[in-house]
Length: 442
Ligand code: FCB
Image: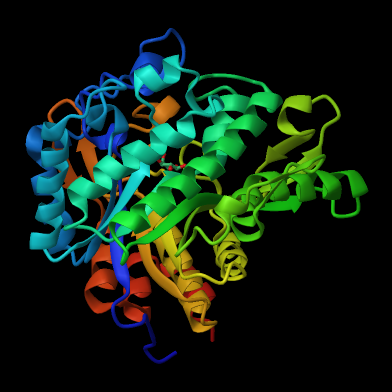
């Protein structure tokens, strides 16, 4: 077939996403630090330690890497426990540090996208009941006020809470993230408080910076009933979709928090979404499981014939990405792909995962889904929460001991995409020839 080029709209944002605890290092005043130091919580007892040593200044070399490889944007998060180390203390030095980093992005021609909450809570907040405490709404609002007041000259696009649905499901249902609870009642409380905290922060940010664009970031999972003929599997899938994928955006759109068995009014949440951040990784099948009250009676697994990532953490399911974008489109606000990527230390699958997902992204753009940008997870291997250093998501490899970085092949593919604002048949032929026919049939 002749050469083809899939072009993206002018001004499309291309970048990578990171989060404070995963890259900064020496974050010792938050709940994840405590979790890492509790017995048996992290794979092989790994510690975040220096992480990617961004707090020590290595953000400079990583921003250089990103800029040189054509990225025109970067998503990072602010560490609440640094900015507010104690309930009555704001640390101006920490805010200065973030100011310097954002200036660093601007100087390199990269648009910053800043997340206020990416999984970690200050210890004092956890000791006050964390997200189960209704006061978290005003705590989060005050924190947002400090951050935005300090950084508003350097950034206009803000993500309030990263993956509230993951925080609740892993922290309060499965118990693999702090605070390690398995309690559906607490999970529902947290879901509600997240919506209210987001809404309060949204309004505060707009008060301080009228031109701000503010949105939540949802982890979208493509969920399919395991046995299409089974009414129970279909019901379990419907329930998971409602509670996991839809709950937050529905609340923001309708002003009602729909817990299936009850609905709670939250009119203050209506319209608090200038854009929707979507994190998409994979697709799963859902079974009805009468024994699993904790997980709303569901059991989930990957398709048996799916192509799995190196450690079996996720499946390569590009069509689920298109579904995620279609789902986001119905919200009627612009979309930003705030995360998408795969764990693959040997970089065998990543090039085709990337090519196939960018192909789906391009399709969605051509359906006029109003997609503003794509942020790959992630730039350099980083500390992957309870999986420690086992899962390697970076376009660049990291040796956490020596802090040496090494470019992976897929970084070359992403660079070609970012620099030309397109995905071409020549790129796919070079980096992922095994999926060439799928992407450019005929
Ligand atoms: C997402 C998280 C991100 C990273 C990726 C792999 O759920 O937002 O921090 O861990 O998964």
